[in-house]
Length: 208
Image 1 (cartoon, one colour):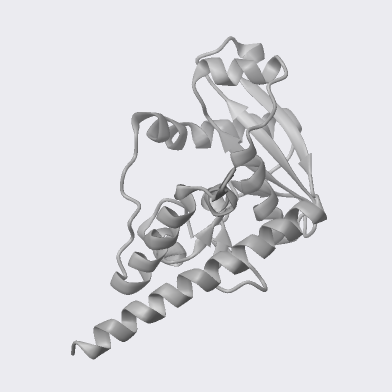
Image 2 (cartoon, helix red, strand yellow; image 1 turned 30 degrees about the vertical axis):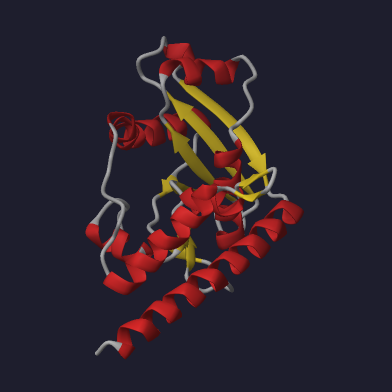
């Protein structure tokens, strides 16, 4: 199953996915952030209607999609490895949750690659020591939770830069405590999604 295809979107419908894990765990000083509730209702809507609610793609997002193939090839050439593309992978224990790594590296239990093609200034800042954003670290830890793999190579790619600065790679190792905390939050979140879905279905049935 290729990513960004109708089949891929259908496989993710109504599920908590890796790219939105940061919204599930986002908190303010007073509790969960509004993005958590927004995402919760997005999943409820998808489950009730069967329609994917993800349709907007900004120019920056489309740039990333368009460059991903070139970034993957650059990573393979630099590291001397082959990357296996995958679609949506379901969590082995937590129903209605999944992840879509940008590629698997090595055999079972080895690694993955997560590709970002950001604005040039953000890309170059990685070479100057800028830490990986928490939203991406959450995403990669969730991918390891789903796949059981041990590490993810975070790849930042920008072909607009000079040759020696086009590809940035940083390995993120599996952190089981981090993963356990994410899994706890996802289970809690999905329980709330299910409660809202069931209540709305009950209301719907009462009107038929």
